[in-house]
Every structure is written in structure tokens, then in C-alpha cells.
Length: 226
Image (tube, rainbow, N blue to C red; front, side, top):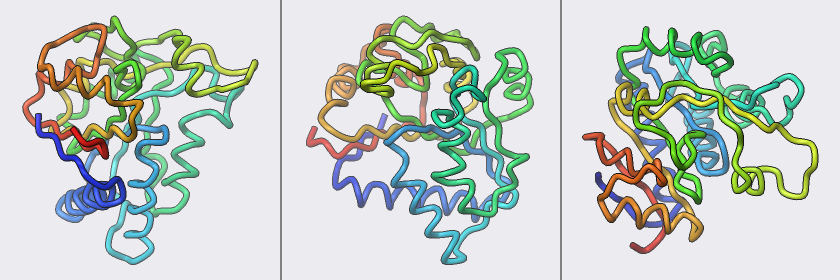
């Protein structure tokens, strides 16, 4: 695994530049995308590229890593709403080519039709989760329904009493097997422990991010001095 540290702004620009180059080289590129705070700056830079006519998303296909259950009930919190607001509504992507998990079997069937994703964007949780593969997840897991952990709830729904309790997530197996290139984004001091677990170079199911050590083409971007 390669690790690149530096200014968050510069690293976001570098990641966006690389995604732009992939799409301009392959107009029907397939992307596996994350939500949350980590990729927001990258998505904004991709919007900028589109507005500057440096890129088109017309033929791009995207899959999202995860989604809350009862999406309609919690639409404001949904990752569909997030992606629309932070990226899709601002570019020329065909929304029929954007996919979110709703049913494990159906999503696995869609994934089975994908030879590989040209690039996968992953955030990492403070507890080392990737997508919603929480501590204890198996490397053999495929798309599954999970109950949100207390730490994830505290992070995502501070001081709220009404929030989704479950989510659906792509499993570690498909992240590893379907991703040609993986970018992990880890901004801020709260991610240091997860990065230290990666640096230890030891697979630990309690820190699912360490499963990525089994992939041959992973780059970790962080603004921490490590």
C-alpha cells in the first residue's frame, strides 16, 4: 500500500485530477463511490471540471458502497440524497447509471455483471470501518444488512433521537475483488488510529480497513504527518 500525506486541499485536487484522467481516457468508466465528509471536496472539484468543460459524465457508471435502510423514511439522511446534492445534480451523469444497494441479493447480481471498477473511493471510520463493514466483518462478506454501531450513530446523528438504525453495505469481498484501484481518504486526527493499524501491516478483523492490505493497488491519502 502506498501512502501519500500532505495538504488536504492539494491531495483532493490530485485525486480529482486522477479521476478526471480516468474518465477522459475511458468515457464509460465505472466508479465505486463513498459518501460522508471525506470525499466532499473531491466531488466539488469534479463539478468544477465539468463546469469548465474538462470532463463529461454522460457514460460514467457509478455504484455506491452503502445506503441506509428505509431510504424513503429517512430520505434527507439517505446517501442517494447526499450524492445528488454533492455531485450528481451538478453534472451531466445519467442517473439511470447510478446504483445504490437496496437488497443484498439484487445488488450482488448487479456487482456480478461488473468486471471491475476503474477506481474505488473509500473513506475510513474512526473504528476502522470501510463502507459500513464494521469491526468484526469478514473478508468473505458480500452485500449485507447491518445494524449501525453506537459509535457510527454518534458520529452520524449527533443529538438526534430519530435516525435510521440499519444500513446495507457492499462487503469486503467485492471491494477487494472488483476494484482495480482503491483510494482511501483519511482526513484529520480522528483517523490516526486506523492509519496506525494499516502501518502495522497486520490483518485485523477488528479493523476492517486492514483487509485492504490484501489488495495490490491501494493508495492512502491523508493530511496527517505520519
